[in-house]
Image (cartoon, rainbow, N blue to C red):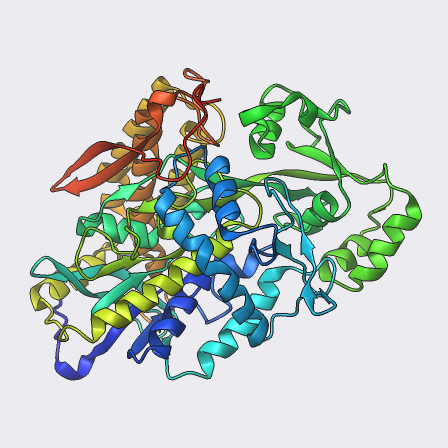
Length: 573
Protein backbone atom coordinates (compact mmCIF):
# COMPACT_ATOMS: atom_id res chain seq x y z
CA UNK A 1 0.00 0.00 0.00
CA UNK A 2 1.12 3.51 -0.80
CA UNK A 3 1.62 6.16 1.80
CA UNK A 4 0.63 9.77 1.25
CA UNK A 5 3.40 11.99 2.70
CA UNK A 6 2.10 15.06 4.49
CA UNK A 7 4.41 18.06 4.46
CA UNK A 8 3.74 21.63 5.45
CA UNK A 9 3.76 22.66 1.80
CA UNK A 10 1.20 20.04 0.75
CA UNK A 11 -1.50 21.17 3.20
CA UNK A 12 -4.06 23.89 2.41
CA UNK A 13 -4.59 25.99 5.54
CA UNK A 14 -7.57 28.22 6.34
CA UNK A 15 -9.35 29.87 9.23
CA UNK A 16 -12.63 28.60 7.77
CA UNK A 17 -13.01 25.66 5.40
CA UNK A 18 -16.37 25.67 3.60
CA UNK A 19 -17.25 22.41 1.87
CA UNK A 20 -19.98 22.96 -0.72
CA UNK A 21 -20.73 25.96 -2.92
CA UNK A 22 -24.50 26.25 -3.10
CA UNK A 23 -26.33 29.18 -1.57
CA UNK A 24 -25.51 28.16 2.04
CA UNK A 25 -21.81 27.60 1.36
CA UNK A 26 -21.46 30.80 -0.64
CA UNK A 27 -23.18 32.93 2.00
CA UNK A 28 -21.06 31.28 4.70
CA UNK A 29 -17.86 32.00 2.77
CA UNK A 30 -18.83 35.61 2.06
CA UNK A 31 -19.88 36.33 5.63
CA UNK A 32 -16.72 34.83 7.12
CA UNK A 33 -14.53 36.63 4.59
CA UNK A 34 -16.24 39.96 5.16
CA UNK A 35 -15.55 39.56 8.88
CA UNK A 36 -11.84 39.10 8.24
CA UNK A 37 -11.42 35.32 8.21
CA UNK A 38 -9.17 33.52 5.73
CA UNK A 39 -11.66 31.32 3.82
CA UNK A 40 -11.24 28.34 1.50
CA UNK A 41 -14.35 27.27 -0.44
CA UNK A 42 -14.44 23.78 -1.97
CA UNK A 43 -16.85 22.51 -4.61
CA UNK A 44 -17.23 19.06 -6.17
CA UNK A 45 -17.56 20.60 -9.65
CA UNK A 46 -17.06 24.05 -11.12
CA UNK A 47 -18.27 27.06 -9.16
CA UNK A 48 -21.80 27.81 -10.32
CA UNK A 49 -21.83 24.75 -12.59
CA UNK A 50 -21.67 22.04 -9.95
CA UNK A 51 -24.60 19.98 -8.76
CA UNK A 52 -25.86 22.43 -6.14
CA UNK A 53 -29.64 22.37 -5.82
CA UNK A 54 -29.48 26.19 -5.67
CA UNK A 55 -28.99 26.41 -9.42
CA UNK A 56 -32.20 24.45 -9.98
CA UNK A 57 -34.30 26.69 -7.72
CA UNK A 58 -37.70 27.62 -9.09
CA UNK A 59 -39.65 30.81 -8.61
CA UNK A 60 -37.86 32.37 -5.74
CA UNK A 61 -37.75 32.44 -1.98
CA UNK A 62 -39.94 33.47 0.91
CA UNK A 63 -39.07 36.69 2.74
CA UNK A 64 -41.38 38.69 5.00
CA UNK A 65 -40.47 42.14 3.68
CA UNK A 66 -43.58 44.26 4.28
CA UNK A 67 -46.36 44.56 6.89
CA UNK A 68 -48.75 43.04 7.72
CA UNK A 69 -46.36 40.14 7.12
CA UNK A 70 -43.42 39.71 9.49
CA UNK A 71 -40.57 37.30 10.25
CA UNK A 72 -42.64 36.01 13.17
CA UNK A 73 -45.59 35.14 10.91
CA UNK A 74 -43.14 33.57 8.45
CA UNK A 75 -41.82 31.43 11.31
CA UNK A 76 -45.34 30.42 12.34
CA UNK A 77 -46.22 29.34 8.79
CA UNK A 78 -42.98 27.32 8.66
CA UNK A 79 -43.75 25.55 11.94
CA UNK A 80 -47.32 24.74 10.89
CA UNK A 81 -46.09 23.28 7.60
CA UNK A 82 -43.43 21.29 9.50
CA UNK A 83 -46.17 19.73 11.63
CA UNK A 84 -44.58 21.21 14.77
CA UNK A 85 -41.39 19.15 14.58
CA UNK A 86 -39.21 22.16 13.77
CA UNK A 87 -36.78 23.61 16.29
CA UNK A 88 -38.86 26.72 16.95
CA UNK A 89 -35.98 28.77 18.33
CA UNK A 90 -33.97 28.01 15.20
CA UNK A 91 -36.84 28.86 12.85
CA UNK A 92 -37.49 32.23 14.52
CA UNK A 93 -33.76 32.98 14.37
CA UNK A 94 -33.59 32.18 10.65
CA UNK A 95 -36.69 34.07 9.53
CA UNK A 96 -35.39 37.22 11.22
CA UNK A 97 -32.20 36.97 9.15
CA UNK A 98 -33.90 36.54 5.79
CA UNK A 99 -35.23 40.04 4.87
CA UNK A 100 -31.78 41.66 5.12
CA UNK A 101 -30.27 38.86 3.04
CA UNK A 102 -32.84 39.27 0.27
CA UNK A 103 -32.13 42.99 0.14
CA UNK A 104 -28.47 42.07 -0.12
CA UNK A 105 -29.27 39.82 -3.10
CA UNK A 106 -31.06 42.77 -4.65
CA UNK A 107 -28.01 45.03 -4.17
CA UNK A 108 -25.78 42.37 -5.67
CA UNK A 109 -27.88 42.28 -8.81
CA UNK A 110 -30.68 39.70 -8.64
CA UNK A 111 -33.32 41.15 -10.95
CA UNK A 112 -36.59 41.49 -9.07
CA UNK A 113 -39.85 42.97 -10.30
CA UNK A 114 -40.71 46.23 -8.56
CA UNK A 115 -43.53 48.74 -8.55
CA UNK A 116 -43.15 52.18 -6.98
CA UNK A 117 -39.81 51.12 -5.54
CA UNK A 118 -41.18 48.06 -3.75
CA UNK A 119 -40.79 44.37 -4.51
CA UNK A 120 -43.81 42.77 -6.17
CA UNK A 121 -44.75 39.88 -3.90
CA UNK A 122 -46.32 36.56 -4.88
CA UNK A 123 -48.32 34.35 -2.58
CA UNK A 124 -47.69 30.62 -2.74
CA UNK A 125 -49.54 27.85 -0.87
CA UNK A 126 -49.02 27.90 2.89
CA UNK A 127 -48.21 31.61 3.17
CA UNK A 128 -50.39 33.82 5.36
CA UNK A 129 -49.41 36.80 3.20
CA UNK A 130 -47.71 37.15 -0.22
CA UNK A 131 -44.06 36.47 0.62
CA UNK A 132 -42.11 35.66 -2.55
CA UNK A 133 -40.40 38.59 -4.33
CA UNK A 134 -41.23 38.14 -8.02
CA UNK A 135 -38.44 37.99 -10.55
CA UNK A 136 -38.34 40.68 -13.21
CA UNK A 137 -39.16 38.22 -15.97
CA UNK A 138 -42.11 35.84 -15.82
CA UNK A 139 -41.25 32.18 -16.29
CA UNK A 140 -37.62 32.71 -15.23
CA UNK A 141 -36.01 30.37 -12.69
CA UNK A 142 -34.49 31.99 -9.63
CA UNK A 143 -31.59 29.54 -9.79
CA UNK A 144 -30.33 31.23 -12.95
CA UNK A 145 -30.20 34.55 -11.13
CA UNK A 146 -28.47 33.11 -8.08
CA UNK A 147 -25.84 31.47 -10.28
CA UNK A 148 -25.08 34.72 -12.07
CA UNK A 149 -24.93 36.91 -8.97
CA UNK A 150 -23.47 34.69 -6.24
CA UNK A 151 -20.54 33.42 -8.26
CA UNK A 152 -19.65 37.01 -9.12
CA UNK A 153 -19.70 37.97 -5.45
CA UNK A 154 -17.36 35.10 -4.59
CA UNK A 155 -14.96 35.96 -7.40
CA UNK A 156 -14.59 39.59 -6.39
CA UNK A 157 -13.54 38.69 -2.85
CA UNK A 158 -10.33 37.28 -1.46
CA UNK A 159 -11.80 33.79 -1.10
CA UNK A 160 -9.76 30.79 -2.23
CA UNK A 161 -12.00 28.64 -4.44
CA UNK A 162 -10.94 25.06 -5.16
CA UNK A 163 -12.98 23.27 -7.82
CA UNK A 164 -13.37 19.62 -8.79
CA UNK A 165 -12.54 18.40 -5.27
CA UNK A 166 -14.48 15.40 -3.94
CA UNK A 167 -14.10 15.45 -0.16
CA UNK A 168 -13.44 11.93 1.14
CA UNK A 169 -13.68 12.36 4.92
CA UNK A 170 -13.20 14.74 7.81
CA UNK A 171 -9.98 14.94 9.81
CA UNK A 172 -10.08 14.87 13.61
CA UNK A 173 -7.61 15.59 16.37
CA UNK A 174 -8.18 15.66 20.14
CA UNK A 175 -11.94 15.29 19.69
CA UNK A 176 -12.29 18.17 17.21
CA UNK A 177 -12.71 18.33 13.46
CA UNK A 178 -9.60 20.04 12.10
CA UNK A 179 -10.18 19.85 8.36
CA UNK A 180 -10.72 17.28 5.63
CA UNK A 181 -9.10 15.25 2.90
CA UNK A 182 -10.34 15.26 -0.67
CA UNK A 183 -9.71 13.75 -4.07
CA UNK A 184 -8.47 16.33 -6.57
CA UNK A 185 -10.35 15.01 -9.61
CA UNK A 186 -8.20 16.94 -12.07
CA UNK A 187 -4.87 15.73 -10.69
CA UNK A 188 -5.92 12.39 -9.24
CA UNK A 189 -4.25 13.19 -5.94
CA UNK A 190 -5.29 13.45 -2.31
CA UNK A 191 -5.52 17.01 -0.98
CA UNK A 192 -5.26 17.78 2.73
CA UNK A 193 -7.11 20.73 4.26
CA UNK A 194 -6.40 22.08 7.73
CA UNK A 195 -8.77 24.61 9.28
CA UNK A 196 -9.76 26.16 12.59
CA UNK A 197 -13.41 25.50 11.70
CA UNK A 198 -15.08 23.42 9.00
CA UNK A 199 -18.52 24.20 7.61
CA UNK A 200 -20.38 21.42 5.86
CA UNK A 201 -22.63 22.98 3.20
CA UNK A 202 -22.74 19.96 0.92
CA UNK A 203 -26.50 19.95 0.39
CA UNK A 204 -28.93 17.14 0.95
CA UNK A 205 -29.24 13.53 -0.06
CA UNK A 206 -32.10 13.38 -2.58
CA UNK A 207 -29.71 12.10 -5.24
CA UNK A 208 -29.89 8.80 -3.37
CA UNK A 209 -33.31 8.41 -5.02
CA UNK A 210 -33.36 7.45 -8.70
CA UNK A 211 -35.97 10.06 -9.70
CA UNK A 212 -34.63 13.37 -8.43
CA UNK A 213 -34.05 17.02 -9.31
CA UNK A 214 -30.62 16.89 -7.61
CA UNK A 215 -28.66 13.84 -8.83
CA UNK A 216 -25.36 15.13 -7.38
CA UNK A 217 -26.78 15.58 -3.87
CA UNK A 218 -25.81 12.19 -2.48
CA UNK A 219 -25.52 13.00 1.22
CA UNK A 220 -21.73 13.26 1.21
CA UNK A 221 -21.51 15.76 4.04
CA UNK A 222 -24.00 14.00 6.32
CA UNK A 223 -22.27 10.68 5.76
CA UNK A 224 -18.84 12.13 6.56
CA UNK A 225 -20.19 13.84 9.67
CA UNK A 226 -21.91 10.60 10.74
CA UNK A 227 -18.68 8.62 10.41
CA UNK A 228 -16.91 11.31 12.45
CA UNK A 229 -19.42 10.91 15.30
CA UNK A 230 -21.83 13.76 14.57
CA UNK A 231 -25.47 13.40 15.57
CA UNK A 232 -27.83 12.94 12.60
CA UNK A 233 -31.51 13.85 12.93
CA UNK A 234 -34.83 13.95 11.01
CA UNK A 235 -33.73 11.48 8.31
CA UNK A 236 -37.23 10.08 7.77
CA UNK A 237 -38.40 13.40 6.30
CA UNK A 238 -37.82 14.79 2.83
CA UNK A 239 -39.60 16.81 0.15
CA UNK A 240 -40.50 15.60 -3.32
CA UNK A 241 -41.19 18.04 -6.13
CA UNK A 242 -44.68 17.27 -7.38
CA UNK A 243 -44.45 19.06 -10.72
CA UNK A 244 -41.43 17.45 -12.38
CA UNK A 245 -42.02 16.89 -16.10
CA UNK A 246 -42.15 13.27 -17.26
CA UNK A 247 -43.81 13.93 -20.65
CA UNK A 248 -43.20 15.18 -23.35
CA UNK A 249 -39.79 13.44 -23.43
CA UNK A 250 -37.76 16.50 -24.42
CA UNK A 251 -38.37 18.08 -21.00
CA UNK A 252 -38.20 15.02 -18.73
CA UNK A 253 -36.78 15.90 -15.30
CA UNK A 254 -37.33 19.64 -15.60
CA UNK A 255 -39.38 21.81 -13.27
CA UNK A 256 -40.85 24.20 -15.84
CA UNK A 257 -44.43 22.94 -15.09
CA UNK A 258 -44.20 25.17 -12.01
CA UNK A 259 -45.20 27.98 -14.37
CA UNK A 260 -48.43 26.15 -15.16
CA UNK A 261 -49.16 25.39 -11.52
CA UNK A 262 -48.35 28.68 -9.82
CA UNK A 263 -48.50 31.42 -12.45
CA UNK A 264 -51.50 30.05 -14.37
CA UNK A 265 -53.32 28.11 -11.63
CA UNK A 266 -52.96 24.80 -13.43
CA UNK A 267 -55.21 21.92 -12.40
CA UNK A 268 -54.02 18.40 -11.62
CA UNK A 269 -56.01 15.53 -13.14
CA UNK A 270 -55.53 11.82 -12.72
CA UNK A 271 -55.74 9.24 -15.51
CA UNK A 272 -59.54 9.20 -15.45
CA UNK A 273 -59.91 12.98 -15.63
CA UNK A 274 -60.65 13.59 -11.95
CA UNK A 275 -59.46 16.84 -10.30
CA UNK A 276 -58.21 14.59 -7.53
CA UNK A 277 -56.61 17.14 -5.20
CA UNK A 278 -60.13 18.01 -4.06
CA UNK A 279 -60.24 14.63 -2.34
CA UNK A 280 -57.06 15.21 -0.32
CA UNK A 281 -57.70 17.51 2.64
CA UNK A 282 -56.02 18.62 5.84
CA UNK A 283 -52.59 17.19 6.59
CA UNK A 284 -52.93 14.81 3.62
CA UNK A 285 -53.31 17.67 1.10
CA UNK A 286 -49.72 17.20 -0.05
CA UNK A 287 -49.39 17.10 -3.87
CA UNK A 288 -46.42 14.67 -4.15
CA UNK A 289 -48.10 12.15 -1.86
CA UNK A 290 -51.46 12.58 -3.58
CA UNK A 291 -49.99 12.03 -7.07
CA UNK A 292 -48.08 8.95 -5.94
CA UNK A 293 -51.20 7.57 -4.26
CA UNK A 294 -53.22 8.01 -7.46
CA UNK A 295 -50.52 6.18 -9.43
CA UNK A 296 -50.30 3.38 -6.86
CA UNK A 297 -54.07 2.86 -6.98
CA UNK A 298 -54.11 2.62 -10.79
CA UNK A 299 -55.32 6.12 -11.63
CA UNK A 300 -52.05 7.59 -12.88
CA UNK A 301 -51.34 9.24 -16.20
CA UNK A 302 -50.10 7.32 -19.23
CA UNK A 303 -46.45 7.59 -18.12
CA UNK A 304 -46.90 7.13 -14.38
CA UNK A 305 -47.78 10.55 -12.98
CA UNK A 306 -50.61 13.06 -13.22
CA UNK A 307 -51.82 15.52 -15.84
CA UNK A 308 -51.26 19.24 -15.26
CA UNK A 309 -53.51 21.34 -17.46
CA UNK A 310 -54.26 25.04 -18.10
CA UNK A 311 -56.94 24.35 -20.70
CA UNK A 312 -59.56 25.88 -18.42
CA UNK A 313 -58.08 29.35 -19.03
CA UNK A 314 -59.07 31.70 -21.86
CA UNK A 315 -56.62 31.62 -24.77
CA UNK A 316 -55.88 35.34 -24.57
CA UNK A 317 -54.87 35.04 -20.90
CA UNK A 318 -52.43 32.24 -21.76
CA UNK A 319 -51.16 34.26 -24.72
CA UNK A 320 -50.50 37.25 -22.47
CA UNK A 321 -48.45 35.02 -20.13
CA UNK A 322 -46.43 33.65 -23.05
CA UNK A 323 -45.70 37.19 -24.22
CA UNK A 324 -44.33 37.99 -20.75
CA UNK A 325 -42.27 34.81 -20.65
CA UNK A 326 -40.56 35.44 -23.98
CA UNK A 327 -37.97 32.98 -25.26
CA UNK A 328 -37.15 30.85 -22.21
CA UNK A 329 -35.69 27.49 -23.12
CA UNK A 330 -38.51 25.34 -21.80
CA UNK A 331 -41.04 27.13 -24.00
CA UNK A 332 -38.78 26.91 -27.05
CA UNK A 333 -38.42 23.15 -26.52
CA UNK A 334 -42.17 22.66 -26.21
CA UNK A 335 -42.80 24.61 -29.39
CA UNK A 336 -40.11 22.60 -31.22
CA UNK A 337 -41.94 19.31 -30.58
CA UNK A 338 -45.37 20.74 -31.37
CA UNK A 339 -46.71 20.70 -27.82
CA UNK A 340 -50.01 22.63 -27.77
CA UNK A 341 -49.71 24.68 -24.62
CA UNK A 342 -53.35 25.82 -24.93
CA UNK A 343 -54.89 22.36 -25.00
CA UNK A 344 -52.37 19.65 -24.09
CA UNK A 345 -51.71 18.62 -20.47
CA UNK A 346 -48.14 18.01 -19.41
CA UNK A 347 -47.50 14.87 -17.38
CA UNK A 348 -45.80 15.43 -14.03
CA UNK A 349 -44.62 13.16 -11.21
CA UNK A 350 -42.84 13.56 -7.86
CA UNK A 351 -39.04 13.71 -7.86
CA UNK A 352 -36.68 13.95 -4.90
CA UNK A 353 -36.23 17.65 -4.16
CA UNK A 354 -35.04 18.52 -0.67
CA UNK A 355 -34.02 16.54 2.42
CA UNK A 356 -34.88 17.79 5.89
CA UNK A 357 -32.59 15.44 7.77
CA UNK A 358 -28.88 15.80 8.39
CA UNK A 359 -26.55 17.15 11.06
CA UNK A 360 -28.14 17.98 14.38
CA UNK A 361 -27.19 21.63 15.02
CA UNK A 362 -27.74 24.39 17.57
CA UNK A 363 -28.58 28.06 17.00
CA UNK A 364 -24.96 28.74 16.02
CA UNK A 365 -24.96 25.95 13.39
CA UNK A 366 -22.58 23.92 15.59
CA UNK A 367 -22.75 20.14 15.58
CA UNK A 368 -21.93 18.09 18.67
CA UNK A 369 -18.27 17.91 17.50
CA UNK A 370 -15.99 20.87 18.19
CA UNK A 371 -14.91 22.68 15.04
CA UNK A 372 -17.66 21.22 12.85
CA UNK A 373 -20.57 23.34 11.63
CA UNK A 374 -23.41 22.57 9.21
CA UNK A 375 -25.38 24.98 7.06
CA UNK A 376 -28.02 24.63 4.40
CA UNK A 377 -29.89 21.51 3.42
CA UNK A 378 -27.48 19.32 5.39
CA UNK A 379 -28.62 20.96 8.64
CA UNK A 380 -31.54 19.27 10.42
CA UNK A 381 -34.18 20.84 12.72
CA UNK A 382 -35.15 23.66 10.36
CA UNK A 383 -38.20 22.38 8.46
CA UNK A 384 -39.62 19.54 10.50
CA UNK A 385 -41.81 17.08 8.61
CA UNK A 386 -42.68 19.23 5.58
CA UNK A 387 -42.20 22.65 4.07
CA UNK A 388 -43.85 25.17 1.77
CA UNK A 389 -42.81 26.29 -1.70
CA UNK A 390 -39.90 28.72 -1.73
CA UNK A 391 -38.99 28.18 1.92
CA UNK A 392 -35.93 25.92 1.82
CA UNK A 393 -33.65 28.32 -0.06
CA UNK A 394 -34.03 31.28 2.36
CA UNK A 395 -33.66 29.08 5.44
CA UNK A 396 -30.48 27.57 3.95
CA UNK A 397 -29.21 31.03 3.05
CA UNK A 398 -29.71 32.25 6.62
CA UNK A 399 -27.99 29.17 8.03
CA UNK A 400 -24.98 29.90 5.83
CA UNK A 401 -24.80 33.47 7.04
CA UNK A 402 -24.91 32.39 10.69
CA UNK A 403 -22.29 29.66 10.19
CA UNK A 404 -19.96 32.12 8.45
CA UNK A 405 -20.37 34.65 11.25
CA UNK A 406 -19.78 32.11 14.02
CA UNK A 407 -16.72 30.52 12.42
CA UNK A 408 -15.16 33.92 11.73
CA UNK A 409 -15.58 34.75 15.42
CA UNK A 410 -14.05 31.41 16.41
CA UNK A 411 -11.09 31.97 14.07
CA UNK A 412 -10.04 35.00 16.10
CA UNK A 413 -9.98 32.97 19.32
CA UNK A 414 -8.04 29.79 18.51
CA UNK A 415 -4.82 28.70 16.85
CA UNK A 416 -4.57 26.65 13.68
CA UNK A 417 -4.84 22.98 14.78
CA UNK A 418 -2.55 20.08 14.02
CA UNK A 419 -3.60 17.16 11.86
CA UNK A 420 -3.11 13.44 12.46
CA UNK A 421 -0.81 12.16 9.70
CA UNK A 422 -1.71 8.55 10.45
CA UNK A 423 -5.37 9.33 9.78
CA UNK A 424 -4.44 10.93 6.45
CA UNK A 425 -2.40 7.87 5.49
CA UNK A 426 -5.24 5.51 6.37
CA UNK A 427 -7.76 7.51 4.34
CA UNK A 428 -5.40 7.53 1.38
CA UNK A 429 -4.93 3.75 1.57
CA UNK A 430 -8.67 3.18 1.79
CA UNK A 431 -9.28 5.48 -1.16
CA UNK A 432 -6.92 3.42 -3.32
CA UNK A 433 -8.56 0.05 -2.63
CA UNK A 434 -11.20 0.19 -5.45
CA UNK A 435 -8.44 1.29 -7.86
CA UNK A 436 -6.22 -1.65 -6.91
CA UNK A 437 -8.97 -4.27 -7.07
CA UNK A 438 -8.80 -5.95 -10.47
CA UNK A 439 -12.41 -7.08 -10.72
CA UNK A 440 -15.69 -6.65 -8.89
CA UNK A 441 -18.72 -4.36 -9.00
CA UNK A 442 -18.53 -0.94 -10.61
CA UNK A 443 -19.61 2.18 -8.68
CA UNK A 444 -22.57 2.67 -11.02
CA UNK A 445 -23.79 -0.89 -10.36
CA UNK A 446 -23.66 -0.32 -6.61
CA UNK A 447 -25.29 3.10 -6.94
CA UNK A 448 -28.20 1.64 -8.87
CA UNK A 449 -28.59 -1.11 -6.27
CA UNK A 450 -28.76 1.50 -3.48
CA UNK A 451 -31.36 3.52 -5.38
CA UNK A 452 -33.41 0.36 -5.97
CA UNK A 453 -33.40 -0.42 -2.24
CA UNK A 454 -34.39 3.11 -1.25
CA UNK A 455 -37.13 3.39 -3.87
CA UNK A 456 -38.54 -0.06 -3.21
CA UNK A 457 -38.61 0.01 0.60
CA UNK A 458 -38.52 3.66 1.73
CA UNK A 459 -40.16 5.70 -1.02
CA UNK A 460 -43.11 8.05 -0.80
CA UNK A 461 -45.62 5.22 -0.37
CA UNK A 462 -45.40 1.65 0.88
CA UNK A 463 -43.49 2.16 4.13
CA UNK A 464 -44.38 -0.62 6.57
CA UNK A 465 -42.50 -2.37 9.35
CA UNK A 466 -42.04 -5.47 7.21
CA UNK A 467 -40.82 -3.57 4.15
CA UNK A 468 -38.53 -1.25 6.08
CA UNK A 469 -36.95 -4.18 7.90
CA UNK A 470 -36.43 -5.85 4.53
CA UNK A 471 -34.83 -2.65 3.20
CA UNK A 472 -32.53 -2.47 6.21
CA UNK A 473 -31.52 -6.08 5.66
CA UNK A 474 -30.81 -5.36 1.99
CA UNK A 475 -28.63 -2.31 2.68
CA UNK A 476 -26.70 -4.24 5.36
CA UNK A 477 -26.12 -7.04 2.83
CA UNK A 478 -24.96 -4.48 0.25
CA UNK A 479 -22.52 -3.01 2.76
CA UNK A 480 -21.05 -6.40 3.61
CA UNK A 481 -20.96 -7.86 0.11
CA UNK A 482 -21.16 -5.23 -2.64
CA UNK A 483 -19.03 -2.48 -1.08
CA UNK A 484 -16.27 -4.97 -0.36
CA UNK A 485 -16.21 -5.84 -4.08
CA UNK A 486 -16.21 -2.26 -5.34
CA UNK A 487 -13.80 -1.94 -8.27
CA UNK A 488 -12.78 0.92 -10.56
CA UNK A 489 -12.05 -0.38 -14.05
CA UNK A 490 -10.27 2.75 -15.30
CA UNK A 491 -6.87 2.90 -13.61
CA UNK A 492 -5.87 6.44 -14.65
CA UNK A 493 -5.93 8.77 -11.66
CA UNK A 494 -6.51 12.09 -13.45
CA UNK A 495 -10.13 12.93 -14.31
CA UNK A 496 -11.29 9.50 -13.17
CA UNK A 497 -14.96 10.14 -12.39
CA UNK A 498 -15.50 6.44 -11.75
CA UNK A 499 -13.03 6.71 -8.87
CA UNK A 500 -14.93 9.68 -7.49
CA UNK A 501 -18.09 7.60 -7.84
CA UNK A 502 -16.59 4.96 -5.58
CA UNK A 503 -16.41 7.60 -2.84
CA UNK A 504 -20.03 8.59 -3.48
CA UNK A 505 -21.55 5.12 -3.14
CA UNK A 506 -19.98 4.65 0.28
CA UNK A 507 -21.76 7.82 1.39
CA UNK A 508 -25.03 6.76 -0.23
CA UNK A 509 -24.91 3.46 1.67
CA UNK A 510 -24.62 5.22 5.03
CA UNK A 511 -27.39 7.69 4.15
CA UNK A 512 -29.80 5.02 2.95
CA UNK A 513 -29.33 3.04 6.15
CA UNK A 514 -30.07 6.14 8.24
CA UNK A 515 -33.21 6.97 6.22
CA UNK A 516 -34.57 3.46 6.65
CA UNK A 517 -33.71 3.28 10.37
CA UNK A 518 -35.45 6.60 11.06
CA UNK A 519 -38.53 5.63 9.02
CA UNK A 520 -38.73 2.32 10.88
CA UNK A 521 -38.48 4.06 14.26
CA UNK A 522 -41.25 6.62 13.63
CA UNK A 523 -44.48 4.64 14.01
CA UNK A 524 -46.83 7.32 12.71
CA UNK A 525 -47.43 9.30 9.50
CA UNK A 526 -46.41 12.98 9.39
CA UNK A 527 -45.55 15.23 6.48
CA UNK A 528 -44.21 13.11 3.62
CA UNK A 529 -43.27 10.27 5.96
CA UNK A 530 -46.22 7.94 5.46
CA UNK A 531 -46.43 4.58 7.22
CA UNK A 532 -49.08 2.34 5.66
CA UNK A 533 -49.30 0.44 8.96
CA UNK A 534 -49.54 3.67 11.03
CA UNK A 535 -51.48 6.03 8.71
CA UNK A 536 -52.39 8.66 11.30
CA UNK A 537 -50.42 11.47 12.93
CA UNK A 538 -50.04 10.99 16.69
CA UNK A 539 -49.36 13.72 19.29
CA UNK A 540 -47.11 11.35 21.25
CA UNK A 541 -44.73 11.42 18.26
CA UNK A 542 -43.93 15.11 18.61
CA UNK A 543 -40.38 13.92 19.01
CA UNK A 544 -37.17 14.02 17.03
CA UNK A 545 -35.19 10.89 16.08
CA UNK A 546 -31.42 11.31 16.49
CA UNK A 547 -28.81 8.75 15.44
CA UNK A 548 -25.09 8.63 16.13
CA UNK A 549 -22.36 6.15 15.23
CA UNK A 550 -20.54 4.47 18.11
CA UNK A 551 -17.99 2.02 16.81
CA UNK A 552 -19.88 -0.21 14.38
CA UNK A 553 -23.24 0.41 16.06
CA UNK A 554 -25.95 3.01 15.37
CA UNK A 555 -27.30 4.47 18.61
CA UNK A 556 -30.81 5.90 18.28
CA UNK A 557 -32.31 8.35 20.77
CA UNK A 558 -35.67 10.08 20.77
CA UNK A 559 -35.81 13.71 21.87
CA UNK A 560 -39.08 15.53 22.71
CA UNK A 561 -39.77 18.69 20.71
CA UNK A 562 -40.28 21.89 22.71
CA UNK A 563 -42.81 24.63 21.92
CA UNK A 564 -41.47 28.00 23.11
CA UNK A 565 -43.56 30.00 20.61
CA UNK A 566 -46.38 27.82 19.24
CA UNK A 567 -48.17 24.85 20.71
CA UNK A 568 -49.59 22.21 18.35
CA UNK A 569 -53.33 21.58 18.19
CA UNK A 570 -54.46 19.35 21.04
CA UNK A 571 -55.66 16.66 18.64
CA UNK A 572 -52.47 16.67 16.53
CA UNK A 573 -54.64 17.05 13.43
